[in-house]
Image (cartoon, rainbow, N blue to C red):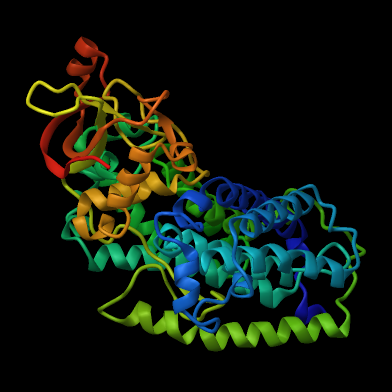
Length: 468
């Protein structure tokens, strides 16, 4: 059955599955710690309301049977436990059917969470993790040689991630075609990292080279993934290097890391390590399952192909409720100016021009100008990301931002745990406002003089002083 297997990919399979299990663990931990105040029973956008409106076929989730915050926590911590087992390799020596079942468990649990997570879970890396999780189950364990069709599907997924992102940029903001987007992007991206300011201050010719390298990597290199080794392995190595560059330049949750483990699966590991000689052929039932799933995924792939060919290409859209095949892309447009919403409170009984306001501190997004942007990825700070969107347009924050202010006025503990700093630890403030500021990175001279990483100026109130 040599036509069906790829024995040289055994180490790539191992690296891919272990890496993906680590990302699953982080994703479930993220849900356990953040879902309740964002989308729980008393969350900013309650999941029970969605479950009453949307049928199972549109939002497949185990929580259609019953939702409670306790059950959500049980599902999330169960996902953490199963992901940890997969990470340490406990499933690799299990019977093949049990191995497949163990990989389906985190996929089903996380799909159940994503399907009811609404805007908080509306990011492309959620679908990417789910789609990659199905491929991990189809790869099998050490009891069978890696199936060649699944390795091709991994290349097809990585192709869509990279080529989709490249096309959306080329078709989108003209600064990508003019090679000028990175004059702004390092500063205006959702969550800058510790090195983002240094990237932003690089000479502009280097920014042009960054953009040009991005176009080459995303528009040309992906086609090489389907060629024989060592060409495909070289292309995958280029993807790994460019993704590590993105890891250094900002915080994009686990998008870069899932992309990296996909690329690692396609490296030519046989040049470094000799493959085992005793890799058994897959049993008939596994061959049938892999063949059927491969055919189904290829049929569903007509949707992302149409999307890639369309002049109205869409970013990060799922083409089936189970998220087996999706379209990807990022930053089709780039902001030129960074705006941030600061939430501030006061105990003043009647706020006026002389009122002293104290800001709530978020874990990842800019606030205190002297605080260096932290490294948070691959962990995902969902509220911080959505605050960035809310600063772009009032429409993004309209469903939940006023309720966030109300929760802070109440001193709601689950909501406060999403924040880094609460300036009112003893009792909630009497008044809260949401104010928009313009932020920019300080120059080298400004940083030497003040020690600040940011310069900011107040623009306007998003929500005027509000009290219970």
